[in-house]
Length: 152
Image (cartoon, rainbow, N blue to C red; front, side, top):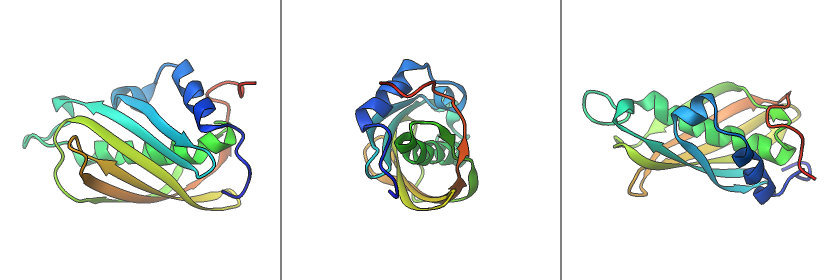
């Protein structure tokens, strides 16, 4: 990270839990498991059911990509007190094997920051803990206030 984080990981998780999940986070059953604002890292859990599956009984890839995108975004914005959004400029996902519904874990990691542009990596683990997908993304910081003021 190029600047000192504004929040600790515990403070970031507390901020996220104070507000009910909305939009994609609610749809994907997302909950924060760990945030390390010093490293720019986030780990989330997602509880997904059969409604996310294809006719073959495996999760549709777009949902997996959304989980990776969310973890990478939180890794990017938590160190900055959630005062920024980081819209994805480009993203590449590699699907390693089909994934069944259940509890999935996604991880996001900041790789590099250059001004307002950020480079990220992500990993997604299936319900038995096997690596199921990876991603890399480029985003851009935009100032917002979507989780309220930074806690004291």
